[in-house]
Each structure stands twice: as structure tokens, then as C-alpha cells.
Image 1: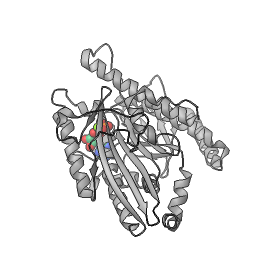
Image 2 (image 1 turned 30 degrees about the vertical axis):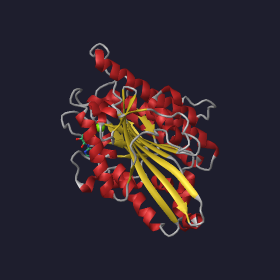
Image 3 (image 1 turned 90 degrees about the horizontal axis):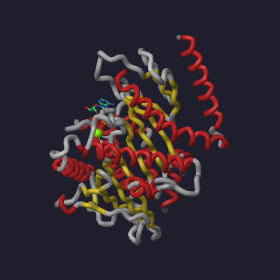
Length: 379
Ligand code: ADP
Ligand code: MG
């Protein structure tokens, strides 16, 4: 029964197959809020995959072009971003593990993309909410053939400690991660797990989790930008012939990637910064190792990669959403975000060269070359 459903949706299925085992990188540029500061980012065309940095003031790194699977400009809507993410999210219902994470400096729009604007209007909901609504719709469409059960967990990782954001009593909320998924297949077996049946259930849980996060942040100002938050959706399916499938979707709002000036911070702030730095570079190392098909993948080097292990690598699908601010004063952080993202995506495009997609890659490379020339001529 299950295969029939999949075939009915042939187009989607093909898209899903294209994404099989792959690492994709999208870049989102948020609108500018500072009219004083010049904008340093240009991007190209409607279906763009290029980001051009073009600072007015001379900068150490100068002009640069970056290429990604997809680039969303400042006017892109939440729905547009979601639409390009949807096939990936839907593949969870076919038994794939998926990990989507938002990367970027504080203020670049990560939370906007994942959760939506704070106190959000219903029209501007982020990927977390849209994804779950979509999964409920799919589950309903397939209900005569597969019986789905959807559950969520929500945790935060702060200073390499995992905290349960859905626990009623947050003092008992410290969690352990299983490196090898045990009998029940969960990497956080003791984390609070809620079965969800509707978008309203999801909204309520997300609010509860956010509140839990805020309560603990009074002592340490603006903690949310210095911890990783992970919403995990567990999907269990049973089809009419007794077949089962189990998969999960991790939706991750990462801690801000900005580097802090070591001469200016000390004590707790320095410790925080070092933990963030370490876990983000571990994430980069894991993805780069996967893209290069290394035999050893260093999952164990951070809590974050350990937690995401089941949805990074193997047949899992990974999407990195790199967020950048367009303003001149963010230039050096923007460069470092794009380099981090490029490190992951270049390798992936290189690996794809032997496939039939290589023509497209070559075209894009030619496009980059001609753009570089055009930029050089402008000088
Ligand atoms: P981060 O989570 O990366 O620190 P936020 O998502 O909190 O950044 O975004 C910073 C501010 O910019 C927020 O006020 C947010 O609502 C706004 N913002 C971010 N991205 C967009 C966007 N694409 N469109 C409109 N406003 C945005
Ligand atoms: Mg945020």
C-alpha cells in the first residue's frame, strides 16, 4: 500500500530521490534595517544560486562570489522558503531522517526563518510550524493506507549541556544523549515526548518550550542566541499490510556564529563563546567529512553532532540554511558565514560532478567567472 501512495506522487518522489543522501545549502539574506549603512550583498536573478559581496569601503576580503543550491533575497517570503524545503520535509513521511538547521550571526534571521517573528502573526509562521502542518496534511491524505503517529521533543544545548524544554519541572530537565540509538531508537530517551495531532497542539508546545527557555534566561541576558534549540519530530507509520516505518526530522535554530573579541569578554561569556565555537566547528567538520565520504565521521566531538547523528549521513538528508545580514557593518561576519556554508556545499557539488547534474554546475561556474570579470572591470 505504501509504495502505491509514493508512486501517486511521482513528481515529488523523483525530487526526493534527487535529494537522497545529499547535503544542500541555501542562503537567506534578510532585509536591511539600517538605511545609513551601505548594503554589501547582491544576488542574482529570480532562481538565483549566487551571492555577490560588494563592499563600498575597501575590505580585507574584497569582492567575492559564492554559489549555493538556492539563494533567497530580502524580499523572499516565509512561504517561498518553505516551498523549497517542503520535498525534504515530506520525505520524512517516507521514512527518511532529515536535519534542517539555521546558521548565522545573531540578528541574521535564523529564528525568523525557523519560528517566525516573535509574537508572530499567523501569516508569517516559520518552517517549524509550516512543516508540522504539512506533515499532518500528508498523514491525513494517506490515512487509509498508513497510520501515522507524530510526536515531538524540544531541547536546548547550552554550554554542552542538554536541557529539556518540554519538561514541566525545568530543574530536573538535564538530559543525556545516547550515542548509539538504543532499543527505542531515540538519541534522547529521557526527553519529554508529546504526541501531537494538530497545528494547535504544536503551537502550544512551541510556546511552552520558548517560555521555558526565557525563564532560565533572566540571569544570563539573551541566552537564546547563545544556545542551540532543537525541535525533533518523530514519525512512526504502520501500513495496512503490517509494514512499519520510523523516521525523524530535526529542526535546529543554532546559536549565533559571531566570533567574540577575546580581549573584551571574560568568565562566563568567554566560556559560552568557546562552547559555541567548538560545537559549530564540530558541526562543520561532520558535514565536511560526510561530503568527502570519509570513513571516520567525528560525531562524538560535540553534544550537537551526537544528538543529530541519526539524521546526518547515511541515507539522511541535510539542509543548511545560512543566514546573512546585508549591512556593511556585518561584512566580516557575513564573509565568515558564507565561507562556512561554502565549505560544506563546494565539496558536495564537487562530489556530484560525475552525475548528470554536472552540466548545470559547469554553467554556474562559467557564470561565476564572467561575473568576476564584470566585477573586475567595474574597478
Ligand atoms: P537571529 O535568530 O538570527 O538572531 P532573528 O530571527 O531574531 O535573528 O532576526 C532579527 C530581527 O530581524 C528580528 O526582529 C526579525 O523579526 C527580523 N527579521 C529577520 N529576518 C527577517 C525577514 N526575512 N523579514 C523580515 N524581518 C526579518
Ligand atoms: Mg534567534
